[in-house]
Amino acid sequence: MPFTPEQSAEIKKQILQQVEQLPQENKEEIKEYIKQLNEEQLEEFLKQNKMQVSESNQIQQEGKAQSDKPIFQSIIQGEIPSYKIAENNKSIALLEINPLSKGHSIVLPKQQTTTEKIPKSAMTLAQKIAKKITIIPMAFGTVFKDQEILETILSKSYRAVKQTLALIDGKIELGVKVVKNKLDDVNNGVALEILESLNKLSIKSVKGDNFSDRLLLNHSFLVEKNKFSKFSEEIAKLEKKHNDLKFLYTGPWPPYSFVNIKIAGS
Image 1 (cartoon, helix red, strand yellow):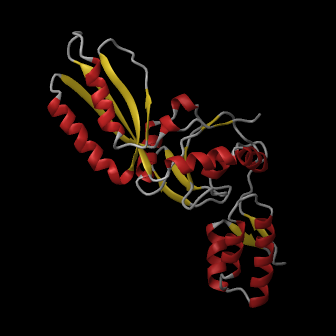
Image 2 (image 1 turned 180 degrees about the vertical axis):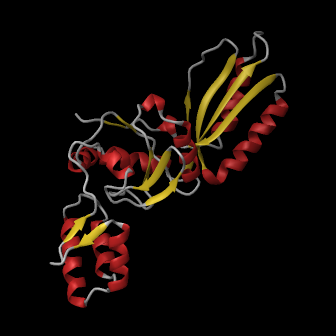
Image 3 (image 1 turned 135 degrees about the vertical axis):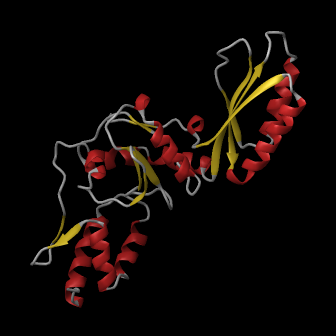
């Protein structure tokens, strides 16, 4: 049964009070959005966010998470409201509840794991999402049992995340390794020539480890998405020009090499 105007006003009032407690930057925009919902839209909003209305018109969460359960596990199991944008067998992508920008999302493995053992499916899903929005790769150094604690920790990293987002927004990471076919010396000028031509098409580049004597070049490049094709064409030209070298070209990836943010509990 649809809400009456009086019920709608009371429910909105309670939701607005909850929004007021959130630390997010776009709080006023969210409040304005809620105020403009009609009775039918409000009912749909409550369903999407798994909220129930009691007989006394008090809103409450469905299946409230237990205090000893990690926050992300509760989100994945649907005990805490979230907005899912993509999913595969082992991972899920959600809109961030406190977004730093439009489309701010997180990709979570469905099973608890360590940073070193994140499933490939999470990376695949991240690549899919990255075609539409910007992803900031971050390692979470601990498990948070309480949403309030998590929001407090994230707020401390707000400035670093905001600066990083400004750097990588609308960009992708491309990896290039150039390998000598033989251990014979190759003129250092060749490596500089290749690097210079690729740097012209990138915003920034970082050098990786030269883990082999045959490895002439090992760099990651931060490239604007609309220059992906030009960058790939340049790689093809370099391969043709230097046919005595082997080019290993990977990506596009979320810009892992250009982000160094670790969220920890202390």
